[in-house]
Length: 158
Image 1 (cartoon, rainbow, N blue to C red):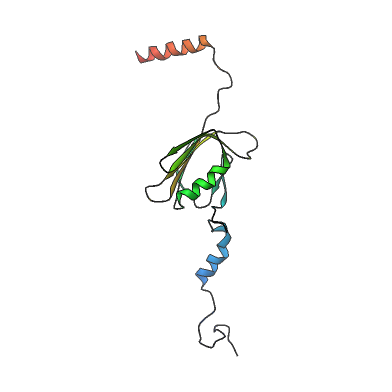
Image 2: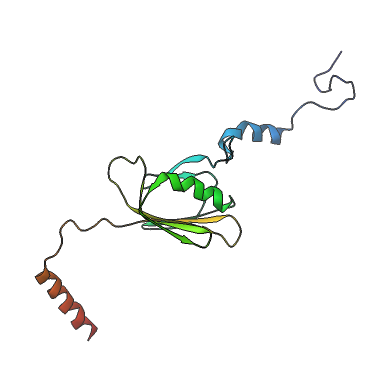
C-alpha cells in the first residue's frame, strides 16, 4: 500500500509540494515575466494609454513624468516598447533609445504625446522614463501679442 506522504518506490521520499512552492506555483501566470517565446509580457498597468510591461518597479513620480527600474534585460524592454509606440523620432543613446513625441498604438480618446526613454541602468537591467508632453496651445498668438510678451520678459530681466 502506498501512503499519501510517500512515493510509489517505497523510499519514503515525499511527493508533496511545500506550502511556499505551492503558493508560488498558484501565482504562476501572474508572476511570469515572459511568454513561451521569451517576450516580455504586458502588465495590466497603463500610463497615458501606454501599456507597461511586467517587472517594472516605480522609481519616481512627478506631475507629468513617471520613472521605473527593472532587472529585465534592456533588449527585452526595448522589444516590448518599440512596437507599441508610433513616432518619427527615435534617438539612440548608447544601447538605449528615446522615443520622442510618441503616441501609444491603439489608444482611443484623447491622445497624449509621450517621450519614452529606455536606457541601461547602472544597477543592471533598464530604466524607463515616460514623460507626458503638454498639448499644443489651442490658439497661436499673433505677432503683436508675441512682441508684447517679449518686451515684458525683457523688462523683467532688467
